[in-house]
Amino acid sequence: MQISIILAHPDPLSFNHAIASTAQQTLMDMGCQVHLHDLCSEGFDPVLPAAEIARGATLPPLVERHCQELREADGLILVHPNWWGMPPAVMKGWIDRVLRPGVAYEFLPGDNGEGVPVGLLKPMTALVFNTTNTPPERELSVFGDPLERTWRDCVLSFCGVRRIERRMFGVVCTSNPEERSNWLAEVAATVRREYAAKAATA
Image 1 (cartoon, rainbow, N blue to C red):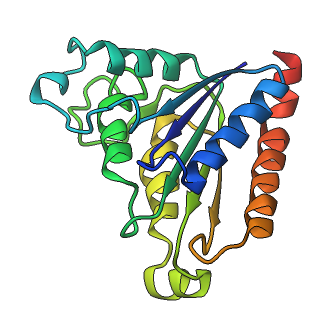
Image 2: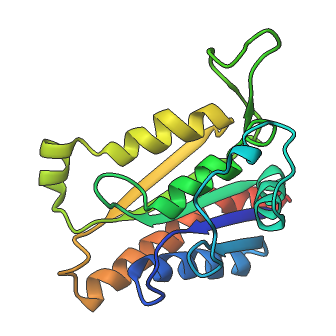
């Protein structure tokens, strides 16, 4: 069973990195093959060049590697902070360059791009782990949790992902070690719950 973990945070000491590491170790303990990509540390360029837009475009080796791993993935874990109600730019660039036609979705014959795409990813569970420094009451009442709409309604559902589970951890900046430890235990439990059965039959 292959799981891709995509991490977007520039600080290697961030809680996002702890989340990604916890998910990776949990999956490895379950016998899964894990591809962890720390987008910032690997220098992933978020800018989509015009030459990459066409479906059959030749891709740089790093982007092609991401695409190939995504084609083969049985599960996907996305880890990033909530910045201005959006993912960091490097994660948005990953969406633009990797969730591309012919890899993550396609349009039906005769559809010139104005219709609803058909997802190409394997039937899978995607886990989205986010961090925030906004109290949850303010997040929901003032902003309405835009990351939920982004991942569930605007991205993953169009790529064929059958099950999407998302968890926002916060407030991180005022959290204590016990809270962070409990959150990481929740990450591990969520990963086991969502992937253990499939890993056992892989």
